[in-house]
Length: 371
Length: 97
Image (cartoon, rainbow over all chains, first blue to last red):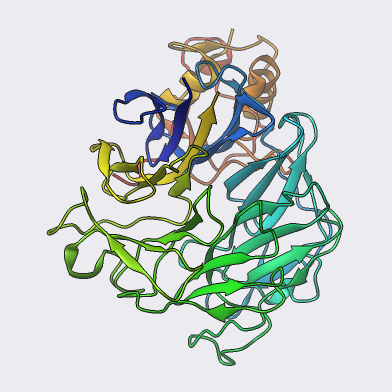
């Protein structure tokens, strides 16, 4: 019988949740790397036993861990992320220049085809690639070298590259998203990048329609429709139907279009999910009711999903990398909260259960569908 | 042998328990860290920067009831440390909750 493995990164370690295809009975394994911040774990689509994990600490810096047995055992691999080329400074919060400084890996994106190839999105915003299973990392410097690189500014969480979408057709396209510079796309495997922010509007910018500076929280894509991209921006839920060349708002009837995460149902490229958050100053659900909102129309028309979720007194947040979907039918949806709960829905969002309730604050959730 | 005490998280990372013994020739902080990283490569980058070798901001070096964090890393360690009577303590600064 098929099953799923949910990889949970938290403020104090990693946890691995497993269930069979029914997804109604779960086992919880962890913490792995107890006491460390685990910003992200992700398994290789080409080899589900290969998992990469970003382990970091304000004291001890960055460690990258690799497992070849589905998370039972781990091996520390390379942790040297050296910037090459590019501008000497970016902008600080007050607009003054600040030297680039590596802080941590926010996101690890394994190649769709080769378990040895993995990309890392880091703070300060840069994209790295390893061709040897994480032992050595090389910057794809064409991103920061874009003529706007010296003007990028951090969002509240830092100047972080948090989203990496690899080409599901096997081609050379890469999309990245940076808070708060925006979306950048490459057509040549990461050698060169260009901003993909036309149609975004952000009131906190001197020029709301500027080429860069947009605080994109997350972008998502369905492999069957690679030209369609979905975005949860700081404010606004957006869609592009032309590979990021133009964006238009699809917030529709959402109770708030502020939020962090967004994802796409594995079985329907037009069914998408967000978790509305009250505002940029109130990082919790409207009225203390934790709700996922689903659109079956690729945005604009949304329905509230709450069966099994807290109806009151809930003041947690759901961060940008903390929602994921499995590949089963019906599609399973999963998300983690800053209150340490991980919720799962085995039926595309119709009903929810807390898989686990008392973990440290959840930073990321990924899912592997196992044969 | 020079004795080194590591923070709990780094002992776990390196698969160690208790104090670490370094090579007898390591008579400076720089030499101790070189020896540590040679023996335990996983510690590279966790105490000092890979390239610049600068101490990470929240790491401190104590020995013989003195704070050596801002002393030149190429300077001789105190006699008691070099003779193995006192440890070099690598400490994570107290910060956060």
